[in-house]
Every structure is written in C-alpha cells, then in structure tokens.
Image: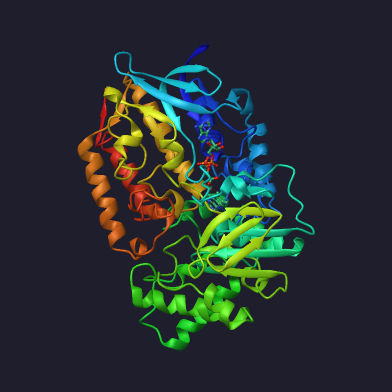
Length: 531
Ligand code: FAD
C-alpha cells in the first residue's frame, strides 16, 4: 500500500476542508485534503438538482476571512443558486491555489489511531495510506444521501435520481411522467422547476413542511454596497447572532402584542421573504402557544395559495411546531399544486407499498412514471462520520461509541479519539446556523489550538470523558427548553430507521457557543487533555 507521511489529513473539500487547508498552510503545517468527488464545493458540487439554491442570503453565505475576496466577488441574486455557489467555491480554490493539495476521487474508508506513536493512519478506497498527526473530518453534515427503504426499489425500469447526487449534465424531463418522493427542502426547491418541464408530475408527501417564499430577486446594488461598505462590522454582528445570520430579530413575545400587531409583523416578514420569518418574535421556538400563531399564519397563507381546498389541507403542516423541522424557503412551491399537470399523493393516507417496474404502487393504486426523483434527504450530521471506520484508542469505533447517539465535546472532538477533529460536528450549532459562519469559527478555533500546542511543544489533544458528558447533558438540556424535540425531524435522526432519537445540533445559539469556545481556549483548553 503506498504510504504518505504528512502532518495533517483533511477529509472533504467543501467549504470546511478548503478553509482548513488554507489555515494549516498559514501555520506551516503540511496537509493534504482527500475528497471523494472530482472537484471542490461539497454540498454545492453534489446537489445539482433543478432549483437548488441557498436559503441564506448570498451577501452572508460566503467566506469572511479574506477582505479582498469578499470585496471582489459579486453575487448576482439575493439568494445564490447552486451553480453560482459552485463557481464561488472554484474561485476560492483558484485564488488560494488549493487544488494542488487536494486528492480528488479519493474516498476515505478507514482512519485508525496508533497510540504508541500518536499517529492516525488514514486509508482510501484506492488503497492509499496516509499517516498523520492530525486528522480533520470536514466531511459535511448533509453529505450522505439516503434512499428510502421501499420494497422493489431496484426493479424500476425508468430513470432514478437522488437530489443529492444529481447528474452533472442535468436532466431533461420534457414530455416525461415524473414522480418525486419527499417534500423536504430539496423537494420544495426542485418541484416547481420540474413541474414546468415535465408532462406530468406526481409528488408523494409523507410530512408537509412549512415554507416561506424566498422573494428571490437580482442583487440590489444598494444592498450589495451597504454590505461591502462595512463588511467587517456586519460580519462581526452576524457571528454573534443566534443563527449566524444578520437579520432583524424581534425581542418581543408573540403573546404580548395585539393580534393586529402580530399579523402585521408576520405579513411584513412574509412579504420580505426568507427564514427571517422565524425572527418575528422571540419565543417562537420556545413557546407552543406563540409558535401556533406563526404556524396558523403560514397555514392560512397556504390555504390562500392552493386553489383545491383538499390539496391545501394536505399541504398545510400540522402536528408539529413551525421551525422545528428545517424551515424551507421556496419559489412558488405551493402555487405549483394549482398546475393541471401536478398531482399530490398523501402517503400517510395511501402508503407506498412498493416500487414496481413501471412506477410506484400505493395502497390506493398504481402510478406510472418515466423517472423517479428521490428527494429523501441525508443521514444527517453523523452519516458521513460513521460510514468511515474510525478507530480511536483501544480500537474504539466511533460508530459504536455513538450507538446511542453522537457524543462530543463542543462538536469538535470525541473522547477516546485524540487529534481527530470534526468541523461542525454534532453538538455544535452547525445545521441550525449559517454554516459558513460556523465553519469559519471551528476552523479558526482549531487553528489557534494547534498553534498554541505547537508553540508549547505539545503533540496531542483529547476531550476528557467528563467534559464530553457535561457538554452532551448541557446540549440536551438546552434542546429540551425549546420546541425542537417535539418534531420527528432529521435534527433528531427521525428520518433514518433505527437511528437514535437525539437532538444532534447545539441549539444554544451561534454567538453564545462562540463565546463558550473562546472561554474554554482562554482557560488553557479546559475539558481537553493536552500532552
Ligand atoms: P460539505 O459541503 O458537505 O462537504 C463535505 C465533503 O466531504 C463532500 O465533498 C464529500 O464528498 C466529502 N466527503 C465526505 N465523506 C468523505 C469520505 N469518506 N472520503 C472523502 N470525502 C468525503 N447551509 C446553509 O448555511 N444555508 C443553506 O441555505 C444551505 N442549503 C443547503 C442545501 C442543501 C441541498 C444541502 C445539502 C445543504 C445545505 N446547507 C446549507 C448546508 C451545507 O452543507 C453547508 O452550508 C456547507 O456547504 C457545508 O460545507 P462542508 O464543507 O462542511 O460540508
């Protein structure tokens, strides 16, 4: 097996891996990135489905670490499309000359810690081996696409696609009968676009989702100038916000204002578009009664947009609080169901029994398709990590250590796995935030930590089991104070049969979390053992 000795191996060339490589180079730490795809971009490399777009405004969904980079780059729309974000990732790679240290088409299959030498051995699907002091998992929270467990999946004779593995050349659905399975974020973006092209589109919905119109538009020059005139200050504010996104958060309770004031606030945010809707009142994610007012507002909007009252009722989410499953942002999603070529199947009423050679069989009948699109999401947050055979001290497997749900200290390290780092791991704000803000915070914290260690001649760092247990307990306690655990969401592992139901991201807020990480570092990396 060819073996390469290097200081650091980074797994994944999305935004996390790219920035990590850049920072390690700055510290003079030789590093290599191993990436299974053929280019940089991660999420935006894989998810090329029609309508794929960022839900965070483009002025905020970009790197802040290099002032020239954020000044020279111009976004064409308020919310950037996947191709534009991918072009941005390629631009960053070029500008920082990253590709020379990235090995593409290389999937990491195993990473094992050699305790005697304090080194990680990382193995790839091509049979290469890398031996390194540090191993950084920049493998992404939403990078392990999941197909549903439906009988007969292999028997379908038409074309099948997963939104998270979309063909690079695109798909032409003209004249085709298409079935879409799933109605999460990706489906909500893809459905309106596919419906405009396909002859016939049938959407299979299990759980309806709350979605807010994006009001996407070409970039407003004044808005761009406002950001660029003081980018550093705006970014600094965003970093301290609950979600890492700078937008107006109302500090009033939804229950302390009059019904008219409440309605006006929701209307204004609905008109403005995007996820800032959830900032309408301070208690929307903590108080069910407050939350109900927002949920009912959105249900009313859905009933107003969808002409067939029966279809509107199927699309109107009920039974879980708004915002506790990832809130979606759409462009004419609900209106799409008014089209004559679009049908909705409620699989709670008529469960899918099997995929058959011609299409899909539900309890109420058969549907014939030329193509099936699976918008069935990801094994979120843990999937990419547990699908690598990661072995720590005493051959401890990460997948086994996490059998009851992920356990980490700060979402950065797991006890028993020295010098193995996770970027936006479970236990950090990650998917509840503007992820580029969270990626930068983790990479910066880790880079400072490695600089600290090197300056003192220290070679290993490891989370103590006590600090980890306290962090896990704190994470659950904060989650329990919110409405999040009330929804069967992928944040809870509920989309993967058999996955433990644990609220995985840290809901304490990006700003609070950032301060906590800084405080821990200032106390000499409290809760970590350095040697
Ligand atoms: P990724 O971009 O997922 O990159 C991880 C990389 O690691 C991938 O390229 C993968 O191929 C590679 N990898 C994984 N395992 C291995 C292995 N074993 N060997 C080799 N390579 C491996 N975030 C937001 O903040 N706002 C949004 O609006 C938003 N929209 C999204 C929409 C979609 C459809 C999806 C899927 C995600 C979205 N996200 C959004 C989250 C998005 O994942 C992050 O914003 C960000 O791109 C994550 O970057 P990353 O580098 O951490 O991970």
